[in-house]
Image 1 (cartoon, helix red, strand yellow):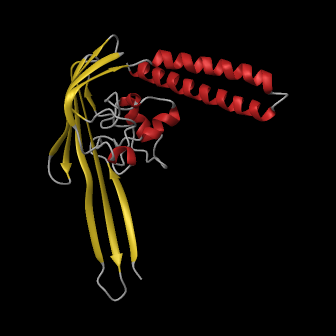
Image 2: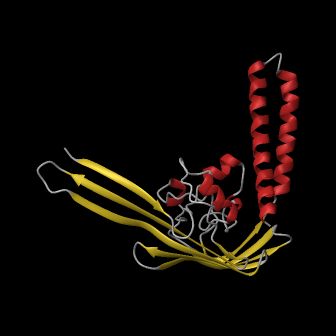
Length: 248
């Protein structure tokens, strides 16, 4: 009989795990840029993402004092990601074998030449396979950070930033976390329109509940569930803004 013991260690270099988890953004009603330096997600986390990741994400939080945010100054932030796995194989009447493998080691740097306006971002992979640059680009924000332009080497902004490169939507087009490309990217943030649509959705469900609560209780309960979900999303966004303003 072979007994295999696998241990996945998420040890943090400078900052907490920076792996992209798009389902968390969807669940909380936030955009990828709410937690990541990159507006399209993935890579280094911003201050809100670091604090949320260290206080809310762990199944059991280990109190080590104030969360580390990676903020060296208003002009510079650094971060990193280290993941490793250890395996032990114990076969009766044979020598025990052990192995330790580094799954990923990356360092991040966000240099803000002009805070909230112009910055340079670098994502460097150190292991496995030696040092290799993953992303290196400049980013310029306009109109109170509603519009941005990036230029340099970057991961293409295609779909949700899934970490699983074996997924169908990653394999077929060949756009994944192993294929950065050189180019120019432009983005426009339309949070206000999204929030207006959410408010309209809430009001519509409110009217639908009033019409169906007696004649169709099941549909009325569904409307209540939709209203609760909308309120949860809006509350999350308000809390995020309050936290950012408080840190500023």
